[in-house]
Amino acid sequence: MKILLQNIDVPGIQNFEVYRRLGGYSAVEKALKTMVHSEVVKEVKDSGLRGRGGAGFPTGMKWFFIDHTTDKPKYMICNADEGEPGTFKDRYLMQHNPHLLVEGMILSSFAIESSTAYIYIRGELFSILHILEKAIGEAYANGFLGKNILGSGYSLDIYCHPGAGAYICGEETALIESLEGNRGNPRMKPPFPAVAGLYGCPTVVNNVETICNIPWIVNNSGAEFAKLGTDKSPGTKLISACGHIRYPGVYEIELGMPVNEFLYSNEYCGGIRDNHQLKAVIAGGSSVPVLPADLILRTPKGEPRLLSYESLSEGGFDSGTMLGSGGFIVMDETTCMVRQLLSYARFYYDESCGQCSPCREGTGWMEKILHRLENGRGRMKDIDLLASVAKNIEGNTICPLGDAAAWPVRSFIHHFRDEFEWHVNEPLACLNMHQVTV
Amino acid sequence: MNFQFSSESIELISKIIKRYPEGRQKSALIPVLHIAQAENHGWLTTEIMNQVAEMLQIQPIEVYEVATFYSMFSLKPVGKCIIEICMTGPCCLSGAEELLAYLESKLGIKAGETTPDGMITLKKVECLAACGGAPVIKNGFNYYENMNFKKADLLLEKCTHESFTSHSNPYHQSL
Ligand SMILES: Cc1cc2nc3c(=O)[nH]c(=O)nc-3n(C[C@H](O)[C@H](O)[C@H](O)COP(=O)(O)O)c2cc1C
Ligand code: SF4
Ligand code: FES
Image 1 (cartoon, rainbow over the protein chains, first blue to last red):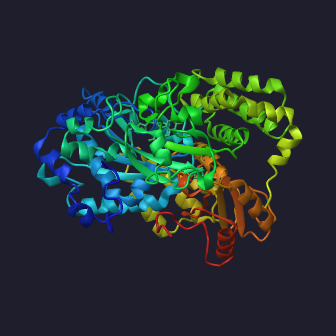
Image 2 (image 1 turned 90 degrees about the vertical axis):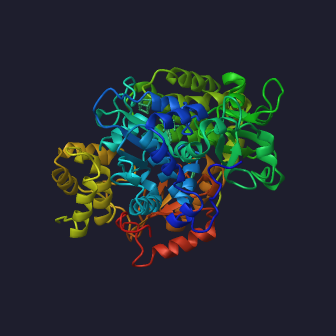
Image 3 (image 1 turned 120 degrees about the vertical axis):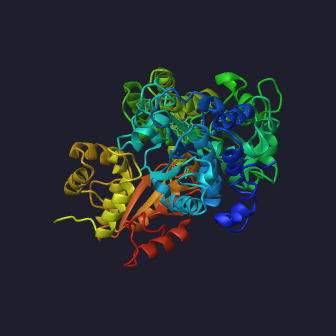
């Protein structure tokens, strides 16, 4: 069952005519001609759709929270900042099927009674911004955007807005700051964006993939969507798979598919490259805990692990993880876990906005200790020090980047402690291993 | 040295400002800085930032704050071409470190430096949302995926061509 990638390979699907011929924009016709905005919200609530940007918050509920008691304008924002390491699904969707996002944006904006919407897209993706602007232009030319759309009395403008290289701007309040022309410093919540977001007005921020589900839901009903996937994880999900697999790429799966099938079937990852062995997987983008081979394939109870919110989190922090953004990073037995972790520690240190001291100092400290360990200059007590620095960041920051930086560190040490100890015990062997030769 | 926006860019900027509500022209800051930087060979001077502040009717400090926060803006001169190599985890699983070492030895510079002839700047960047094609290099607004030494050689060769630059107005075309 495909919702998002159904027509992705159709030649010319980027063009309005082709998209329209395949039933595109029929959901806009249906909503604007036969529904009121609260009915669209209700369908999305009934669908059980959960945000695909990482946090998994129910989309219908988020829309329902929009403050309609004020006369202030409402804003719909699409989060196309895609920066979570291992995640490359939104870029793929926008590049190949831009009208799906435009159609989803029209429906989402209509649902929350917004007449101005922005697509905030990371600055590195200007080539995709052009594709989107072309699609938006076609939607205007065909009467699906602008004033009094389809004679319904509803008007909407959609604009693209580029970022400029800052992972933190994917966090929704940092994104709003950035869209206002400021540094991407996350805001304290509350107030939540639904009450005071862009320019102090009620605002919804949703991920690209989330929004691309809306046309299907409007066409087929929330109840039909809820029949797909599992009870707690309705629908399908894009998984972007990378690392040591035979077929890296973006796949749409019905939620609840066994990890084993996803990893080894030739329809998906095709197994580990060149007959190597599976060592570990980061299942939901670099911010979620890593799991070793046995725990990613089976839950602690010995049942098959499934690609769903609830199955991946089974086992809690010790032996579970999270679905996150669906960035599926696979590592084989040749991977040095200390070196791999160092790259993530450097990432979070670079990307911390620096507002809260536990995150600013802690990420720098973790990077430094890991660097020492990786270069054969670490001490045994560094390993526990590293874990305790991570623990001290958790829960003590304005935004979740602090936790996101801490979890990889804690989970890598938890599951692969012997490798960290080996780096301390065998400094020469470890230096030899890390020699990069051209 | 006096910087002046081209008349084309001025027109484009006034269109961009209209995308935001009355009085919220500061929202156009990032797009305007992208355009300014492209027109000044890839970097921003204080003079340019002051001009941008005046254009958007905000304080110069507000522009400096933003220009220093975002990694795509440079406050010092860069080469005609910037080779941006992704060094985040997934790219490292597929040979980014070897690729970086190769480029460094081939160009005779370290990451963060520019070749003495001013042709090429080598820059490390974080995940480009293209991990399925690791290792990934970005040059201008083009992505080069599944890179290897041979493909890197071809890219370097391209960079030596007179007309090939990383600094064209991002709104004009997607190259
Ligand atoms: C550090 C950080 C980075 C994030 N990056 C992204 C991102 O690139 N794309 C995205 O959609 N959500 C990202 N999020 C999640 C957003 O804050 C927000 O939850 C999401 O855009 C909401 O949309 P959804 O409900 O449709 O998932 C990030 C969160 C954090 C804390
Ligand atoms: S947790 Fe880190 S990134 Fe988030 S607001 Fe604090 S310093 Fe900034
Ligand atoms: S890690 Fe290099 S593109 Fe994602």
